[in-house]
Every structure is written in structure tokens, then in C-alpha cells.
Image 1 (cartoon, rainbow, N blue to C red):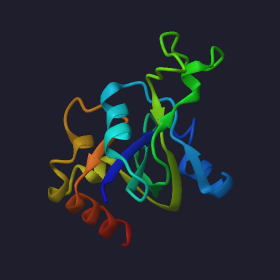
Image 2: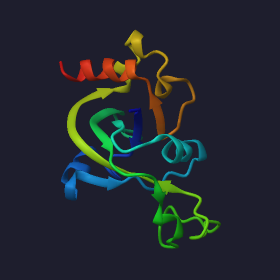
Image 3: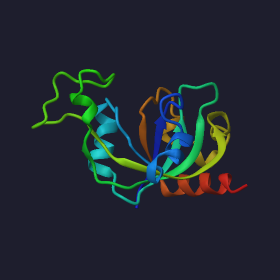
Length: 153
């Protein structure tokens, strides 16, 4: 089992939106960074833990716990000319972008970025590194355990 932090802008998809979705599951579409795509394609497996992170909002931070519930598959938004995520170079026979399905397990208290920065056990967390802008990053088992403990308070 692996662990991930997955960022979403809450005005596009929030933890509340996922909890309200059928089976509390959504496709994690629109990833257009090769490294983040590679994490989904090569690293993620059903059952992996997800820290659902709200980004690009007044108070960014971890807003919920989720899990990966599908193998990677082509992201259909890359083929839709009406989509914000359309990629004219993507072909159905050779998709460039993939997605996975993510199921929300629970909403948590917001664990803000500012609080994450104060926890010594998290200092190596990728999301806390200067210049880190990836929408998907790995989380170590130790970081996961530390965050899980914080969220139980």
C-alpha cells in the first residue's frame, strides 16, 4: 500500500463534492503534468491512501481522507474539444493523459498548510518543499501516520 497527497481546487472538486457523488467516487481527471501523471500511471493501485488536499483557495490544506479505487485509465477530457483539459496532440489509440478513480472516505478538519509546516516529522514532505507545485505527490508511511494522528485530535 502506498500513500499520496492529491490536490484539487475546491471550486472545481471539493471533498464535499466527492462525498456527495454516486458511491462517493470521482475520476481524478485533468492532470496535465507528466510527473503527476506518471505517479498515477506507474505508482497508484486500488487501496492506496489519499490525503485530499484543497489548493488554490484562501486556506489550502488537507480536507479529507480518500482512497484510490481503480487502476489507471485514459482521461476522456483530453479528447473533448469542449473541455478545458483538451489536448489536440492526444489520440485515442495513444492517450497522453490518464486518471484514476478516487473514493472519499471521510471529511476531516482542515489541516492547513501553515500547520503542516510547523510539524518536524513532516519537514521532508514534498508538498512543503519550496517550489513544489505538483498536484500529486507521494507521502511516506511515517508522514501518513503523523497526519492521521493529527486528524484524530
